[in-house]
Image (tube, rainbow, N blue to C red; front, top):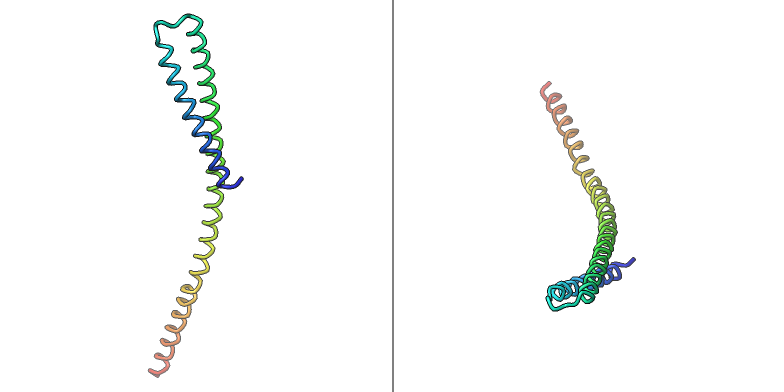
Length: 118
């Protein structure tokens, strides 16, 4: 799934969730009306129940999509960290080699100095 497509689906889910929550708020306000008949109150309560179920499902979908997106991002980060470690290892080879050469040259200078003293 492309990043843009995934982003659009998440935005759609967020918009749906917002609309559900707004509808729930309106229904909750209407349910408080003391002039409602028993039948109207029952219809509003059933509507609220259905909307709360839809809200839960939408939140679950958002979580699933978020988890999948995080897994993709984590995989990319792991790939990049491996690449960075590999490059750092390559970059460290030159200084390590130079350290060995420096040690060798110091040893040769010591030997030449000792030989020169005889």
